[in-house]
Length: 79
Image (tube, rainbow, N blue to C red; front, side, top):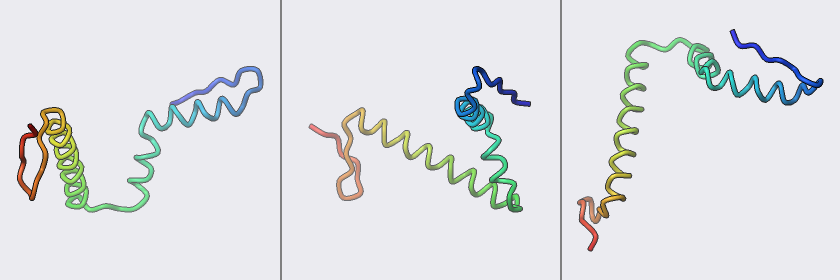
């Protein structure tokens, strides 16, 4: 359970703090995921899609650091 203490009657700051803690706990994401039923196969598909995106972005970053460019669909090292 998340608790927030309001100090000096500063409710706006307390609300910002609550939003930050809730987002950090992942509660909002979980509520959005549970809003509609999702078949296990759909969950698996989305999980794999996110994993592939993460791998793609890591590979792209590695290529940029090592000076590799994609030209006509092939990776070529910069000179």
